[in-house]
Image: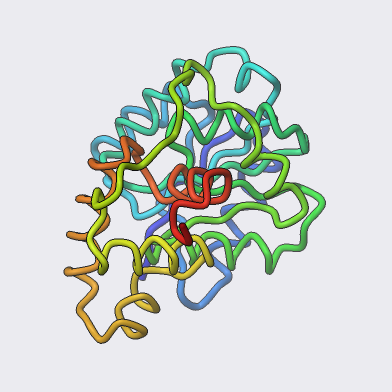
Length: 216
């Protein structure tokens, strides 16, 4: 059962979301932290399966974007999902650049949040459909290089996996579609990330959406 660390500086919202998560039969909230700084230490020691963060993004990813980056690093591969009230493509692009793998707007239903948590816990990513195009067209911070992929950079199998990732499929579904194991999918993704200089599947989706490398 995926173990969830909940963090946020508003006790009522933080506790309400923790209770919502634990009310699900297949998720459990294992800890609450009052802020990202506390969550950094807790995530490093507790090693949860997902960190859910109540965090209203602005164009700078909040007052301390480096704290968000530290939280992602402290989670050591555990996906970070942000619940936010602000539907700002630039702010969301910024959060993705720091390694966040899920964004859920506070206007969405409780079931949407639970689906998002399950998705990232299973190795997927979650981004609001209403802003996908706007976010993927944004220029990533500190990223000026042209996105070109020389012919032959990706193997045929890697290209197939990129195409399926761009459709939003999780590792398990990709493995089933290609008749390979989830471990093999993860190995291919590691190679793809290295070749394309991206760090996670949302960056990969953004990359393929803008440059069409998966269908070139």
